[in-house]
Length: 121
Image 1 (cartoon, rainbow, N blue to C red):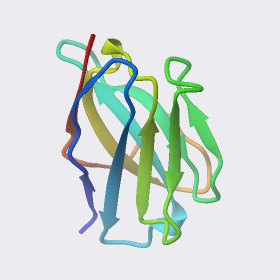
Image 2 (image 1 turned 45 degrees about the horizontal axis):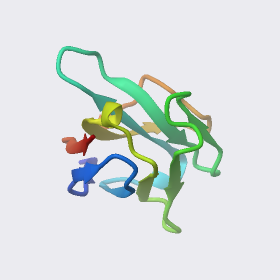
Image 3 (image 1 turned 60 degrees about the vertical axis):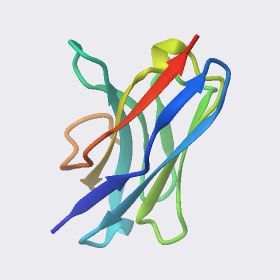
Image 4 (image 1 turned 90 degrees about the horizontal axis):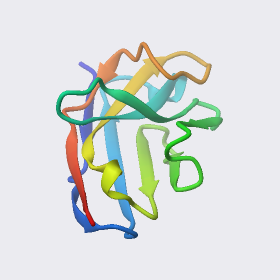
């Protein structure tokens, strides 16, 4: 059974940094792309960043230059380093996985339970 578990988020101030991690289990994630999404109340879940199994990355314009996605050596852990956080980054952040060799922004197969990140002004 595939399982994705995000680390705890938190409450930070604008300008601070925070790193999220996601531990994946249940299959060989070296053949999966991984991604991060976020959602605020009343809005659809939105793409944040993704990384292919080979390490190619892609970011939403809203986080480009501030967030960095990376994978652990074993490929079954994915990180999201968030710098220069803004109040508009406040959301529930979700880790996701999708089988394939490409870089993806949607149609992910597996999802974590989500973790709250709150950025105060």
